[in-house]
Structure formats: C-alpha cells, structure tokens
Image 1: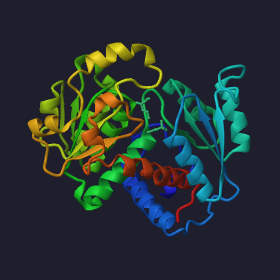
Image 2: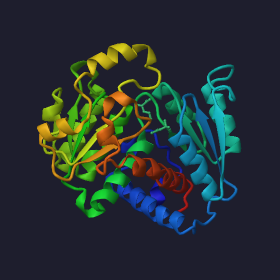
Image 3: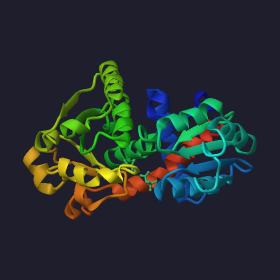
Length: 316
Ligand code: CP
Ligand code: NVA
C-alpha cells in the first residue's frame, strides 16, 4: 500500500488489482478496530477539506466520522461556503486548500471539476462523486460483497445492474473484472453506460478473463446473478428529466417476481448505494434478508478511512 501514498483517487481503476485487494483488506481490518474501539489516532494533526457541490448523507458523515476516529479533522465546505469556480478559479482554490489541508475530498457536478482540483492540488484529492464516477461507493460495495460471500468466494460471482447507466455503475464496471466478477448490465437503450468506460471495462474483462453481457431486458439481465444492484433513475442534477426518466425505466423495478422469472442464483443479494427512491426497488426486496444496503452504507466509513490513511502513508 506504500505505492498509494500521495496519489489521487478519481476513478476506481486508479487502483490496480493488488491495490484494490489491499485497500479492501485494510478496510476490513479498520472495521475490526472500530468495533473493538481500538482505532489509533494515527491521523492526528491531519485534515481533510470536504467540498460538497451536492447533497450527501453517507459520504459526508462517513468521511467526517472516519477522520475523527483516526484523530484527524474534517472540514465541511458547501458551495455556499467556499469560492470554487465562483469568484476564484478552481486552480487557485486547489492551491490554497493544499496549504491548509492534508487531503481534499470533493463531490462535484462535472468530473472535470474534480480532475482540475487534482491537477493543481499539492495534496491528494478524492473524488466523492462526480457525474461520471463514484469510486468510494465501489470500494464499499466490494467490501460488502466480500463480507457476504467471504473474500475468497468473490471470484466467479455475477453482478447484474438493472437501471440507469450512471456514475455508480461506471466504477462497479471498472472494478468487477479485477475482482473476478462477471457483469450483466441491463439498461434501457438510451441509458447505456458511457462508451469510453465500456471500452475500458471490456479491456479489463479480457485481461482478467471475466464476462460482460449488455442488454435491455431486465428478466434476461438478472439470469444467474448472485448480486443485483440498482440506483435511483434520477441522479442529482437530473431532476428536470424526472418524468421522462421514470417512464423510460418502466419495468425496471427490482422485485422478487423479476428475480425469480429471470432465474437469479439461489444466493442472490440486493445492493443499492442509497439514497433510494421508491420506484427502482420494491419494499419487499429492499427490506428483505437478501438486502445488504445498510451494511453497504456502513462500509462507506471503513473504506474511506482506508483511502485517506493510505494516501497519507499510514497503515495500521
Ligand atoms: N451513496 C452515497 O454516496 O450517498 P450520499 O449521497 O448520501 O453521500
Ligand atoms: N447516481 C446517484 C448516486 C448518489 C449517491 C447520483 O449521482 O445522484
């Protein structure tokens, strides 16, 4: 993990397979330390500037609480609080924040914004969700998958995505092949994942020998899957398209009828990054024993702690 020190995290494939595995192992170790109330104050004197251009519950709270547990200080900066691209260039903001803080974490609209922050910051920058990527979520998702199936049983599993080809999907796609996980990507025609990400995923799948299926029929989409994942059909910033989107995703609700018609594996689990809107999953599935959504939310804290600590060169 020494190699991760000082590096930005913009998208999940910034980590190679070995780094991904090591960050996840470290996250599981941090969870044990937190549960035992034995987390060393290893980041004492360090700070993370957290810029949020959009709302957040999990990302904000997991980062602030996780940084506090490690003895460091988080600073919450909403768009109303800081000059970021408004009244001051992103470059200047990055240079100034780097003088005060050990790390910068940013949730932005356009991916370019977090990229520009990283380009100019002299400290590591973490993408806390952009329109294109959500790498912290993917770490938590794979930690949860490891917990549910056992880390040694993840290879060979099949993950089906039923929903919008969005930011959360992009990073799951890029992490699945190195984790040995096959992909079934099911979206309406006009809501496919980004073509560039698809190409990168195909190259990774070839390298790691995993399968990818892409289609529009949810029943076919969940065939044989061990993990079914969805997300809201209306991401932050797309509120004006809500009515059109909800219509386009008709028939995409994850429910037990879909899962049995499609012939999912007996051990299938349900995942969702949250926040959940009512339409993309039935209550019956969302609150069932197959649903790991609250473990997944909890995992956000251990994984962001692992990212921040390793960027600062601290392993415990
Ligand atoms: N999953 C996730 O990123 O949630 P928040 O938007 O609440 O941070
Ligand atoms: N796709 C959602 C994820 C929220 C965590 C969004 O971008 O709003």
